[in-house]
Length: 129
Image (cartoon, rainbow, N blue to C red; front, side, top):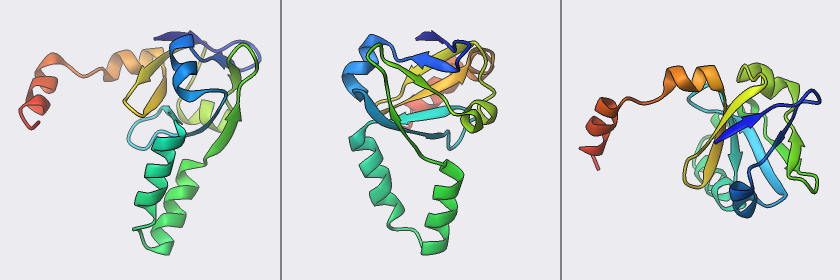
């Protein structure tokens, strides 16, 4: 889904995703790619449960990397993406929002276009399902 970052560094969550995330959710740095991840309450709770299995040191280091931020949208579904997340994901005015079953990722459009999975790679992954 295409999106834009306005001059006030706000993004409007598409209507389709507002029904999933509501007006309160969490964002973090993307774990395996330079993007911003948006978590539903359920997917965040699942991640927190998995983190409990880590040692104290690993759990704290991982949480420091994520830099979780609680977000509340305005009535139009807009929210500000804090500068540390914009810098980490190299976000500019053209964005791509990708639904990933339980969470979504916000990408710099150019980076998304470069990272898009090829059909051949998807077929190799599908063979493992």
